[in-house]
Amino acid sequence: GEIGGPDEADAAVWCKANMKKPIVGFIAGVTAPAGKRMGHAGALISGGADTADAKLAIMEECGFTVTRDPSEMAKLIKGLI
Image (cartoon, rainbow, N blue to C red; front, side):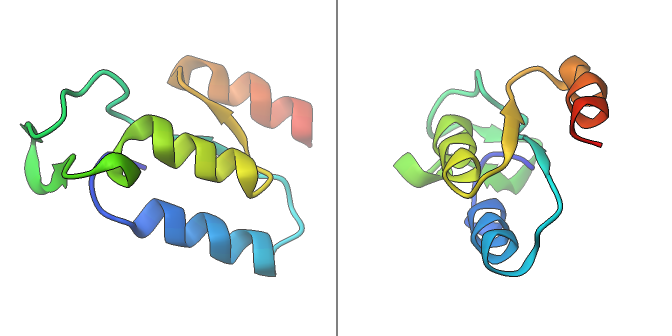
């Protein structure tokens, strides 16, 4: 996922309620400053819930295995299957 907007958090909650398979989550933009547009209008941190850290926390609360480093994703996925 990416910073800005509620889609990733909404998807995490849906996955928790509807899926049993393990999920690895990553949010691009961990170092993005608040209020700065990053690439397109949707990638704008406007509040606390829009940050990468907040979205990663929601994913963790929903049972996802999360990483702040995309290079770790393959290792994490391999460990879950």
